[in-house]
Length: 115
Image (tube, rainbow, N blue to C red; front, side):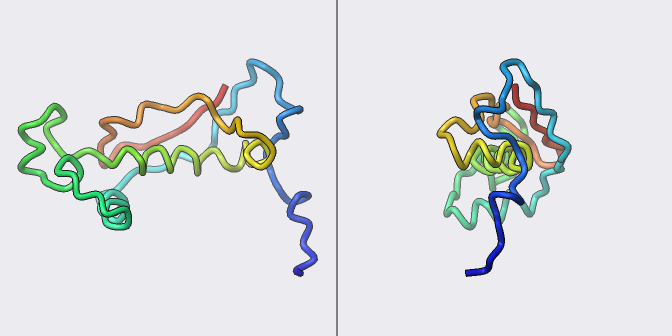
């Protein structure tokens, strides 16, 4: 046993501390790279053409490859951790608002906000 009091070190709010209408504007902004998308697709064995094949994607709605939406969702969850960690440990309600993860493009910066 390490003797570290992780509950005391945890950031975020407990469910009971939340006030309806409070807005959390998370301070982390992250620019998604080609490497992020490629590694996530490789790690999850997702070989969808929309994420990997530039020539195919030129014929599709966005005109270029899109970022794996599960990576986008995971990144949003990670950005929220500092503000909502205590909520996630105590309640199944972590975050009900999620930005549109479909069609996110490499090179764009992602930010998150919870209300």
